[in-house]
Length: 533
Ligand SMILES: Nc1nc2c(ncn2[C@@H]2O[C@H](COP(=O)(O)OP(=O)(O)O)[C@@H](O)[C@H]2O)c(=O)[nH]1
Ligand SMILES: [Mg+2]
Image (cartoon, rainbow, N blue to C red; front, top):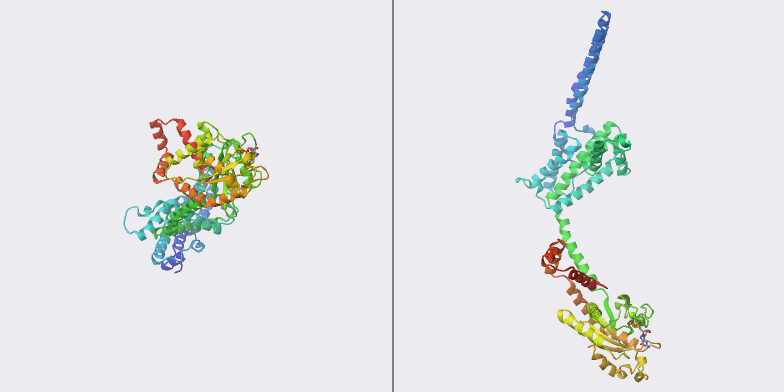
């Protein structure tokens, strides 16, 4: 079905409305054209005879005034009787119906176009476009809902917003296609024409400035744009062409309203909306997937100067972590580390744990955020009370979170080169010779794997340590997955998060008299749990 609705509508009618209108407008002009020269002749003749008969000059001036008055009244009449609309031959179809529409939609389109012609014939001032739009909306809605109050607004808000968005983008195409040089017209030029910034300096009155600001603002609405186009931007083109273009633009705007409204009421926007939840689902899956494939987190803990940083360097096979006799590592340092090709991990070097509750608590908290623990102990360090205390605290934290999976612990005994009893140790008898050391360490920390090493050149045991890490990798991934699952907010937690956002949480906290210190503690905890992620 062809969509050139106006052509069709006019084909149905005996006479084009604009032709009729121009005929109606023509007869007073014809009378004026015939009568004015005749009247003028009479007036001139009369004036001459007045003069010949010596009539006072004042009477002549009065007669001239009457003539001018008559001309003024004629001009006023012509202006007042100017009917809205453009000459029929200049009407062009800037908007066409959607060829994929069914019969109902096509019928609604025909009716809407007819309605639009009527509306513009009534009033084609730009200001009328907004009420006209609502009228078109009502007209289209009535094609779907023949009864009911305010049926034109019975559209869900997201759909309505989508419709407005579509209308704006479609109308944009119309303007680009039909307004000469529209791509060249800059908003700044329009604003400059509006003289908003007061090019005339102090002479500009405040009320005038406010009016100009209002005009600048309304450019962002179609009706405002059309109004400004008429007065400013299209000033260069001929009056008739400008009128025609503006009429066509107004008509196109209302037709786009009808176009979008038909899609809206026939449910064509619903499919696009249904995509939204799907997209959210996909995004959620992606978020989870990204977390699942994230690298395993290996945490290196131990007392100060036990050799943690040296061990990290040995594993990375380059000096990245600063090591020394004095405790150097002040905060966590994270390194990308591939145990083997494809087994990417992050290895986290930590500050040494020291005696005292704060240091032990902090390190225990760090252990809760590990997928695999490398617990470094010096072979030549008999005092292991700090390790014992840390292990106890860590175990306590795990007991408090029974759903949490315990990360595997690899105990690494460094400095074996400084124990005379191990002087004959080699790569192949390393575990056998250091068995008593393993037993001693187990008394402090219940580890899963024991790796004795010498990090002093020539290094010993590092390749065995690497192999042990590979073996623990799978378990570490499981721990990681468990940790991610546990960190997902539950329904209750997420709704309390919403409440917090709404400020209800802070109100409740105030009522319960929570101290600022506790809130701070919580923040620290959450930043801790995010560290290294
Ligand atoms: N002889 C020997 N020295 C080591 C060994 N491991 C580390 N060191 C030294 O011990 C000191 C402290 O090491 P560092 O890695 O800084 O300890 P961290 O505080 O635990 O990070 C450094 O001077 C290292 O060179 C080892 O296996 N044998
Ligand atoms: Mg260090």
